[in-house]
Image (cartoon, rainbow, N blue to C red; front, side):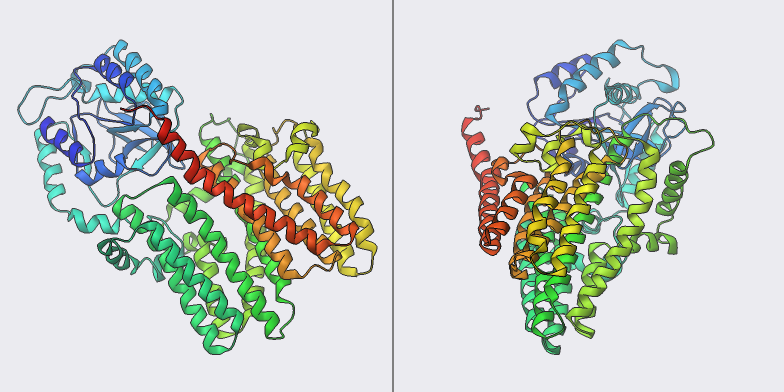
Length: 637
């Protein structure tokens, strides 16, 4: 059995496979390692694909195999939240267990010191006996010391260090830990009953997706995925093709006329299908890369906003009103929504890693969490699909745009996106605010708050320390809205009111360096995005800047901010040249200076072009220059 598992790990991509005599030897081996370490006990019986998927998991950190089987004696029970292992303990010692440790672990280099410490701690602890002892090698050979309870004690000690560990669940394939010959025979029979190659293609589809994607895209996109794999296309290549489809659809929406609108709707649907295929192809071929993940995130948003621009131009061209107003509103709304989504996810991840405070009788937040978990667990029910659809995910947005444009016109498409988007924002915002209010987990202070607020050099040096970041950010939004209202009224009022509105906007800087310990401070970045975008639009309206130019300027801002969101999700540092983007306060000051000087459109165009150039230089530095320099200076192995 040990020999077979060793061969499986080699087929799964392991460069070198070693069998440790005990946990002390494992600690020595892990201490010498310079790359990721894969380890498992000898009692694991699984498809090789299970091991390969664990070894190539796209999550950035350590990942542990977690099974749905109840833990046997000597095996560790696991409790997980939002895909993270938050605790592990012997069977029966974890009342809220959600699964059992699958006996396999992938440890990234940054977590190897924790693994070494855990191995030494587990080695020093008394080993269980009898039913909890180390299992024999069920092939009839000698027992391997690193099996059964040894690897479980190691995992429990490793989890106790607080190291972030992601749960890698087995789906469609087979993985069991066996304790006797009968279990071994049953597991091998179950493995033989699964077509591993066909299942691997099915596994390329996300386990849980939204209604439209599940039933109208993923029902047939795996066939396209397989064709792409046979043609040798990469996920990045498919992403670029999907961008091309979206751009052509946007052009057709701008051209107008029923044939163009219908064709644009079809291309938009096919482009979304390819947007799903790039991820499926990455999972099918195990071709994951940080660059591919970043590009996919940025391309999704850029495609959507290019489509908004096409709709806005088409509406204006068709004489249905100024479509750029609706396009700007849709882009601003969607960006703010995405920021709240990203930060709420960070909030939940942070909450999962913290001990839960006792709540006598259960508070509103506890009841909302329980209700949400019940709905999410009831996969396929009406309430489940309603919950996933009402939030207006990307599949539903693209479907709505395609249908509304093809059946009606571009104005209806934009209005529909805005109405559903506002309702979804109100629904998610209200419920998440309530849940966060009772979770009481400050999250903004766990990261570089100045970076993710997008404070510039001015605020980083002179910002205030008032511990009221959210109220000040909301005040900034109100100031921007007030200026926009004055600009829409017309006259020179807005031009001379702009300095006062700028002062109100800059008031958000009074808390730039203050403590971010509020339960709702996760809303601060989204509020600052709303304030800056609305302020820029107001300056543009007051200065008679053509709205397409204003749209382009705000679009460039969204690129900068989505780059920060991508870095937040990966916990990456500030991008190169970040200070050159001037921060939201610096950009807003320059726009007001240009407005008062009487060349708002020149200022908007110049600043937008400058920021786009800085963005492109940042992309090149991040994904080309810095990696190349690191490769040249890396020591030879």
